[in-house]
Amino acid sequence: MTLIRLQRLFTDELSKRSILSRPPEPPPDALMNDPLKSVFIGITGVFNVPFYWSSLNITNPHMAIVGITGAGKSYFVKSFLIRASYVWNTNAVIIDWAGEYKAWVKQTGGTVVSLGKGDFINIMDVAGMRPLDRVKQIMNSFSILTDIDMFPEQKRLTEEAIEQAYLNNGFALADIAPEGKDAPTIKDVILLLQEKLQEGTYQYPAELENAIYRLRQFARPGEDYFSRKSTINIGKLALSGLVDIDLSGMSDERFRALAALFILQTLKELMRSMGWSEVKGLKTLVVLDEAWKVAGDERSDAITIVREGRKYQFGLIVASQSPLDVNEAIFSNVGTVFILAIKFERFLNYLQGSLNFSSYIRSEILKFGVGQAAVVMSFQTSLKFPGTFIIKRIYGEEPLKVYRIDITSILTQSEIESNIIPRTFEFEKDSINSFLVEIGLANEVIDKIFSDADTKNRVIDIMSLVSELASNQIPSISIVNLLKNIGIDDSIIARILSRVKTNE
Image (cartoon, rainbow, N blue to C red):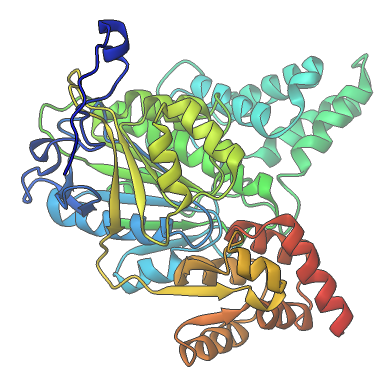
């Protein structure tokens, strides 16, 4: 028998009590868009509603995707691009930092461009712009990637030499360049500066020498990716279906970043030249994956595309394992953020501060396995419902291949019994495969790791993995980065490495 007790309450005390609260999920009509005009993502976590993404009811088509290595970022991107091409006939340009998408693009019949492996970009190509505007873009790239802003005289000398190189090749700086006219190269700029130095009349020869040295870094034999005639046309590639621009063949992060900045600058100008369109849809999606230097700087054209792309039917997808590598202006302006598994408190602090989601959503993110995500959407109209919700799993074009790394062998009995430290870490196969390739592990060794795991229900023992990496001469710093990206705690990583050394 239940007793009912009456209690006298004041209204201010009653107002503090949550009697009815809306579930953390938008209503079905905000999520279930026309399947013929939207992309299916997955099923929501509360009411099992099919979520069909469309840019029509949100502020813009841009996305940010964050999550640890193996959480399913590249799996999501691949599935989304395929479905966008089906639904809207959307083109896609992937600025592929580590060559992660190259094999997939080949399999789907797309185009692969490998910079540093036979393909080149002349960063002085004008691509239908005024040379004066290209000069500004080149100098902006140098400002982002080098310390040239700390040396105003070197900056002035470099800018004047670039302008003179255009004039010497018959360009009018303030006029739109005619099609088919060959642009000068960085090597031409270096020659102009050397001639000035040899004249012996310039009062600051050290500044000239340093300006020459700075440019030579982008024109050395074997690393002259940007100082030869272009073998590719970015404007045409942007409208050529699925395109992967593989930057993994370049020897330095600065080279990759310079290529990415040039591509973004060219795409931005193409976007503007194509003009505004009344027809709804997406002409081109640009994917920036792990491009920390490009996505993190507020001067990058990634931010310009985010701010202007909607009216030109251009969308930007920025994917990163570290939210801190993505400029806050991107999080503030993209229409949709997908948050996959995040294991570090400082990353969650940054995301929660930038996106203002609830403590409930935060606690759910910490529990995520592979393919689960929190979605933060910026709807066009004022909300009477939450714009942040959970999807149980991203549904791709192929089954999601999930593997687990088991660290039980490195834990103490008390740690196992307390159940505070997770024993296994899930990851998506393609993501971890790409990371292993990037750190230099041979393909046959990678295949062996996964084939052995397949015989054990897709479970990989942590000590077996790290011992395999160490025996193949993978540097300790690369092993540490891999374990951190998986989400393993620093103290456990130290214990793993110590155990490996003891067993050697």
